[in-house]
Image (cartoon, rainbow, N blue to C red; front, side, top):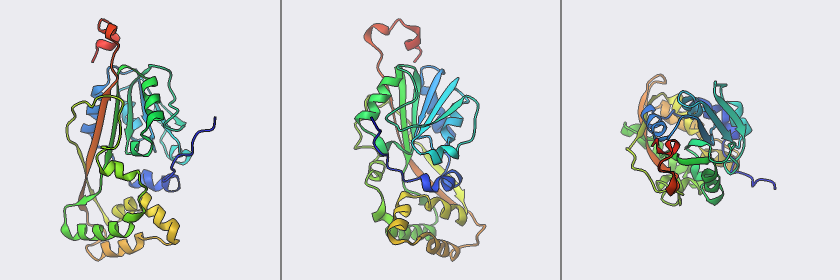
Length: 264
């Protein structure tokens, strides 16, 4: 049976995505890894260019990283213990009950639903963990920069795909398969130049849709506004609130004496 076409918002900007998307904070990834009941196998779903998979490989014997976009996989750096797959989230590259951890960074709002969660439950071992996170809108510390960003958001905001609202609403619309674990609050922060800001904003799916509909790019006007504020080499302090869900697959009632499931 052919797979359902996925909402491909990023293949055409895969190289910019790899260059300009912010990295996830180490405390977040350390926390997620620490939830896993073992270190045998981790899956990174919608892996993009592999930024999470590379970190997981430092802790797990094997990492299977999958993305439905061949263009995104082409941007991934070869890393020991990581195998990359062009595959949709609804077809995970792992055997039944083998994964200690499944991660989804900045993507679950595109495909959260029964088919994906059935695959998660198939692949996770008892006690295994599903962890999904995403970062919400960029916030600038400097009011003059925030004013420019507000104007840009107003210009392109109506072009966001509807799934984006799921992230903005902190995953409230997702029926996750497992009870949520207690998690700390995380955020992301960076010091970015005008070029980095413009590069990042140019990867937004809303910007891509704006370009498609109008045959015009809203980013050059943004760049002019940024250049009017400061020297090109100056750096701005920016941050993103992070939304995190983590849930553990229950163990069968008679497995309490099994060391493989007692480790957590």
